[in-house]
Length: 348
Ligand SMILES: [Zn+2]
Image (cartoon, rainbow, N blue to C red; front, side):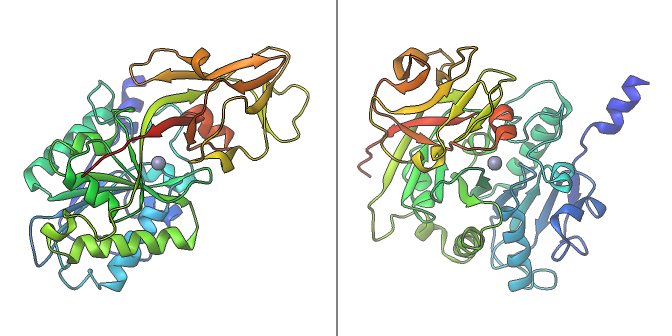
């Protein structure tokens, strides 16, 4: 019986060679009524090779899907060919129906792209096989942040084509190699690939920013997309470490309840992409004496390089540039509290 349940729960990739009926207008939390699971949709276009776009790898990050709906309606793609072929992957639809990043007891859909034995890993491999057959010229994976951050583009390689594709979205660029199980990393061996982080879910500015970017990717000549923009000034950061909290710890921000394990300062999210000096207090540890944990890109713990407990205060030991700090306790436990970055000068 258990096996049967597992078979029913395993995600199965659905393939479409046209835009499914109702897709352009359906509310995202109702998407599962027309697409019950992960779907790969090939949208015809006037020019090949296609642009690969992935949306909703995290179910609560809806700007990606809304941008695609907007594009389909604006360009009338249900009845007309797109300016360029599109391969659209819609990821965690059941999680989107519930408005969560991922369902309980399933892996994060943006951490399944480097092999593994779960049904979701097999799904990812199947998507990658289709993508390698379709040979996209570029890949764009679209996300929201759960904390306040500027809009930025991430790359996993610093080749000029990757950088220029990222520059077209934002002057803020993050180069990272961990976590390596993300879709953009898997695709970077096939074509230039970027991850767009377009602010908080539901913000109109993020939606229009992504729509404009996708229109450029669909209409500009490839050589132009991959060549440097006129203003080459960028802030390029490299992610060097990840910050997590102890499993099951109870967190708070600002005024905290008595049983809080770590009570962070209210304005944590304001620190994202700023230079936080050494000696800065980030929070106060509760009676269990718990602290943040920092691991570098090879998973080595380096907490002591960055933080010390001074009385009960968690204090930075050296200057650091954080990103993705969020006050969403569920996301912090599902993913992480944030990352530490350093400037990454590139003369290209
Ligand atoms: Zn995401």
